[in-house]
Length: 463
Image (cartoon, rainbow, N blue to C red; front, top):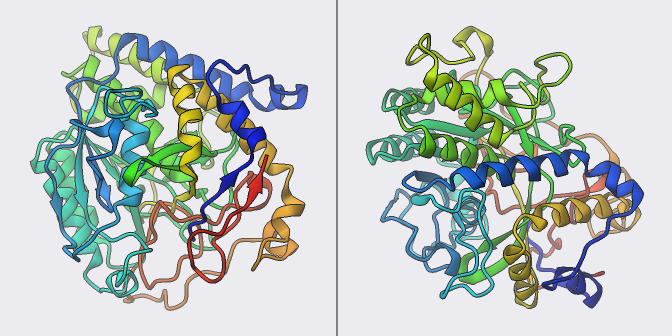
């Protein structure tokens, strides 16, 4: 479900250094939440960039040769060992979090949300585009492989563990036990509260496991992206899930949408907190993230959790907590009884773009968080292209606007759990799906699905 995009000169002009992007009045209204996110992150990054913190990426592997990640990727472990990994999804997530921006090795690199952090790659699955991926995802012991990856990350001392795959069903005990082990090692565990089936109330593991910060994916208005994000008590906090640029293997340019960027935002915020306040426990880190979020009027709801992520607010709350004589180690804001059921991380959406855009995105990196605003504008523009999307091969107007796919078959008690990487709902129980997959469509401003032939290199002219 990957699609390479060739972007026209009009969009490229928007991305060139020094260009001023002026949103329309309608876009300005849509960007209110985005502007607040930019202010919050800018203020947080003036305090810390996460130096000294290791973020484990439990995913499909990370390409350490990417320019903006050079020297930041530690030796990790491969639990797949299938020969020639593509490392797409894990690299995209790592770039969002730890990208160093413009460097000697990466003249067009992009700056991550917590650019001072290091990355520990833990490969627990192949990308869907790799040979043999279907057979791997169909293995009955996949949850055990994921559990081994989580335990390895904890044993290596990673302060933050990002888990890119999710599961639902009966046989999630290995994942739950591994998460409990990681929490006991004082690791902050972050996972997407993705929508794993047509029933958006079904909890997903590990997001639903008590102690995990489950993340809901939000659009530019701060609303849940219904096709990708769950609506249940697994959602502890909401974060941007609209389209973001990122860098993949070989310094290739991609855009990602859904739980993947949302998880990157929350993991980065946790990294900033732990870098500035290293004495806090993982439970206290979760506490300051939830208490500082921009709360919904109800105080909590199952679509955005305790509210939209607030990086600088979390740092301020951490400072106050650290100074408080009543601070109790190990007590979090969310107790075990506050969550119901369990299941894992969600599918992510990524689209590969031509390298000709790298220079433009590099200019945005130099300009700081302008990239966030531009990403939001592109997402808004995408929503207004629903008619064009409906004519994409393999999609009807009903598919672009209609309900989510039916629940995966075979999910009766005692069956192997459905497993998927952060991304789209309705994933068949044949196995996990990578954050690098894409089925963006319709009102969420998504990009079209991969060409039905499954072959890369299909170009769509835009701009």
